[in-house]
Image 1 (cartoon, rainbow, N blue to C red):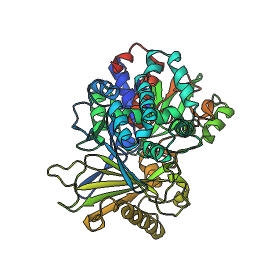
Image 2 (image 1 turned 90 degrees about the horizontal axis):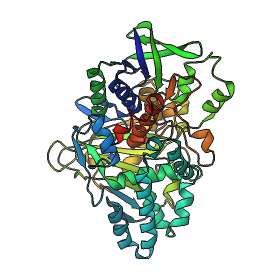
Image 3 (image 1 turned 90 degrees about the vertical axis):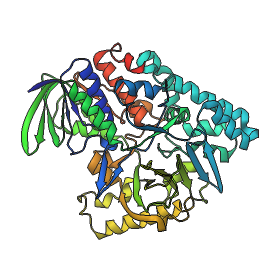
Length: 497
């Protein structure tokens, strides 16, 4: 069977691209190697309990805001979205203090100015800057290459350098950065645009799902199928075939059977490295391009503790909590602890309870470099040995101990818990080295680390978090950018309106 378009991988970017192409009349086929769709959106079951893999909350989903406009076109606004507290959607706990971050650019600046009155002018300027970034987020699609000019300028600036030059109080800088474990706080490389775009979106509004992140993937897949598309799970792409300088087909292993599926167009939601591995002997991939892609560094991963709580004990908090060890001088150093040392910063997120005011589940996440688990890279899930189990158990108890500074009775309130490392994410989501945010973007080397959807093949395109932006909003914008390269701007612009 021949399709108009084949999409490799069913992460958010792949599913959104498939949806857009199907809506434009193309016959599409999504190929996913795992049993579950969605990449980091997938959920997993342990007995009667279901936990999210990597989805916790989104920003800019309020009426008329950018993600709400995009999700409306994908049919995702009918899901059970729940807004976090506008007077404190995030709580940052550090250096003996606790600080709530408010929604709304003005309210955000005002609430922190009440604590740091001498910094009011700086906070108002900072908030205005984030608002400006938020308003121009769709410019690369709406304005074409001209929209990239201002973004590239911000990509070339250091987020850490900007904060140091614009916020004079070190504690306030930590607070403004403290809710950013949802991106890699690496002072030497993190681009200002990445930092500003993500923080801007959450200051607009912050939302959870009353349910699992897998609902997003399932809704998109259902929409694709209703438009005549095909979505195949357990379909591993083993290689890509070429003909006359174009990709002509994908060899797959599906439910134990080998076959070749042909298409005119291919979109890869896999990492660029894995995509090129499917073209190992291609004469059309220049060695210099292959070396460039394979040398790109990956961002850190996460260690996650998924906790099943005893009923009626831990209160449900309608916000996320970022908690740091008291001795940490800068949140920008949270991932630089020596391997094996206790976590110095964690994100605590709760699932919305079905009823009542107490939580039934809690997730604790802390950054973890792949090097901490690399010695087990050649082992299989659930067969990594006793040393690996002991490593995870120790790390879990350290995370729980830090979380007890917020919930003093947490340890006694746990019914059971489950853990995952970057190896887990690598095995179940296909993320290279279990990376949480894809390829590391480097403000000092923009042309080398910021990728475009284009590849050496005219009919093969990249999408997903490995290009310019990560996160739910970032990947959604990237999927629109990829489709604008394929279809032109006109069919894509309505998704932003």
